[in-house]
Amino acid sequence: MLFDEGPANTLNYMIAGYAVFFTAMIFYLASLLMRYRNLKQDLEVLEEIELHDEPKS
Amino acid sequence: MEAKPRGLKILEAVTVVLFLISLWMVFFYAPVEKVMGEVQRVFYYHVATAWVGMLGFGVALVAGIAYLRTSKRKWDIVGLAAVEISLVFFFITILMGSIWARPIWNAWWTWDPRLTTATIVELVYAAYLLLRQGIEDPDRRARFGAVYAILGFISVPLTFLSIRIFRTIHPVVIGNSDPTATGNFDMTSKMLQTFLYGLFTFSVIFATLLWHRIRLGWLADKVEQLRLKTSE
Image (cartoon, helix red, strand yellow):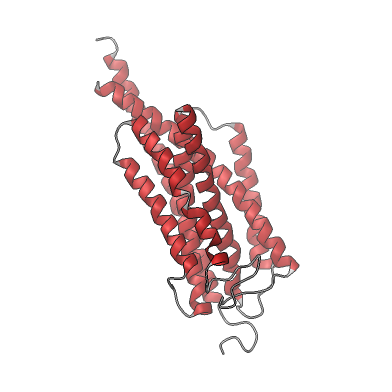
């Protein structure tokens, strides 16, 4: 039986588990930040277009 | 877009402090489990991320009901934000569980009732995001999203109860496990404190992320409205 004598050596699995956690969190936070920046740029462009269009109408 | 509110800045700072304390508890305060060894520490965030997942799907359910009753756009934005965050956390839950299972069950994956229902939840809500993208009219999309979030939530209590009502290999940490479950352990008081503190910390992390994602949702909504206006 694997666990008959003291704690099993499972350190690598623990490291892998937390590596997955931190990697996924970093990716998600980066995705939030990138989407926020892109939307801000889009908003600026659209507001400029709207401003140019207004005098015509 | 307005500047970041002071409340959000404070919440961010509190979240970072809580999270650092939680990490310290997981790695230094909680003892090593006698049988499983270090991999048992995966349990703290495995359950905490699952809790956030279910919490978010619950928020989406409430937001869906609120949208159908009021037709206010804000509820659609809240629902979408909650689902997106929960999907990420639930995905982490599944991956961390699989890594824990390898040395304990001697398998990365098994089609056990808990693992199967958790996968169904993940797929149900991933479909929510994909299907929303296929609807252009914002009001129709919001109505669809609300109904879907309400119906989709059926899969959440099913997952929670799966290890309590079906014969399963997945352990129940709080409550009685099935005799066939593998990987049970008795929590010491330090383990329990770490576990409960983790649940609290992740609830705060969820609140912080939700606030950010809602702000992003408002910005996306504003851009969409302007796009529709300028294309007319």
